[in-house]
Length: 312
Image (cartoon, rainbow, N blue to C red; front, side):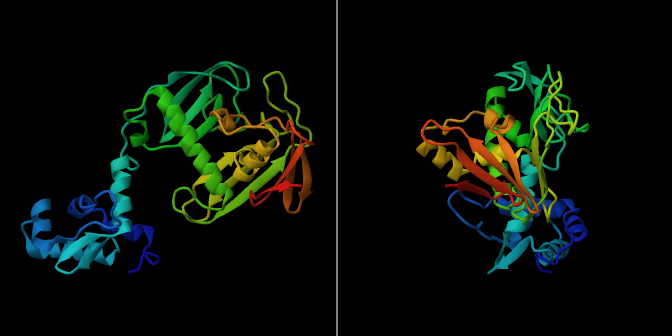
């Protein structure tokens, strides 16, 4: 069975036995820094490491892992394949182990929408940046915690041994990476291809006293949603953030006297307030006008593939 042929139910069936997981952990432990593959372990030594005393039964489990594409035979030993490595590292990171959610903690930042107090909260392997005084950026999403400014997919391991300030910086770095990869059509989780489902601008965007627009139900007028065609990982965000973090745009702004290389977390939490117009609907294309110290406004377009173009 090849990796492409393996179905999810096959993989879960193969990994449902405790001994097989122990084998993968023992083989993965042979990885050393600076190496591309783990060293193989002889059959008898591997059996000793995992406490297998029945060679016939142990051989059956090894063959099951080999057939599933998690382990390969190398000479007189066995070596873990990358499919097995990903399983072990997912378990180690806590992706498939419920370790509970830490209580919300205050951070020394203010809400970019109302200057109110901000806290970090984790729920179901998400880290949410929340304002405790306003609706935040996603008022239209009833399933998100109230006041959500930004949300980042995390693992329990990413929270360990980090202070609230360090978690804040970690979330910003992960969010920046996710935006850039999705904009390039690459899933941050599995590397699969992606599809942009929505790229839109509210033509009648007017915020009420709470900061929410009656027409679109959002606090921000432009919005996009993209997801992976393979694993389903998704991102809901604002096109101005993709534009603001695009390396070509950053370089163009710098050349025009606007240095944004020292960005803070707000680059991912609060889209720049640039004038925006809908250039086209088929395909959807938006254009931003960025005020710069030198010369005329910098005009930048983003299309429904999240491709960014700096106009001359």
